[in-house]
Image (cartoon, rainbow, N blue to C red; front, side, top):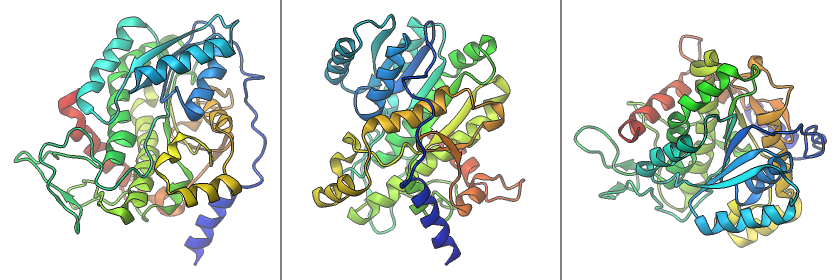
Length: 357
């Protein structure tokens, strides 16, 4: 019963009677000379975040799959903010296709010498059943047990689309950008270079360990209609894990890593949600996309964030929060008395993406 009360309490405090955002486009300092990447920056809260940064003269790379959507968004932003002295560029990035991500990072690095904030905003939510990444070669899946086929060397031949797009893609993209992040942090003000990760309030609905892992430390993402929401919740916990593990590894380089729940938003992310359920959410608890951008803005640009906050979790619309205690234990390493699930998930991600580095 206490676990249920904890989950409901966390949900309530992140959904109702929220404090006003403390960092907005009104008081964000000038961003001249700074360079940012916002994945999925042409729709939803990613678009709103890009607008805020462009208003303050930043250089923003809008990263995503669709050049047409990117061009349309950039054209609209330039019309909306005609006096900006900043710059907006489109960066082709398909987070679902691991084989293409290194080239996207290399394209950015060939054009820029710094990266001040990487906002891993893009993602997919409850897509149609049996949706996989392009890494599918022989999609043999045991639906009952949810165990993907493996090659002889033990590497998975396919990934659930939410695992690939929400977790492995951003993980690989971030790792490929690590050299420029380190370079920037070496000369930037302490704590100003950041990587932020898209979590969600649904982490409270995830399994007790956050992500179900088999005996080998591999995530078990089942397929079928009923499994889609569970897979989404686990993929969002995966980003909580990344934020903590990245902080442990690269905090020494001066890089801050945070995960955030953007809040309950009315965005394109709900495009696969059943219409009746979407109508219910829209009427009762969803907020305009710009409020999610305020959460991301606070996580990536607030001066309240310091190296002491590395690995923390941000609640709407910009404040340090937490998640249910079972995930707190999953985040802790076994050496620290926890379950070590975050560390295991990181090791799995390294193995899954190594061939694409």
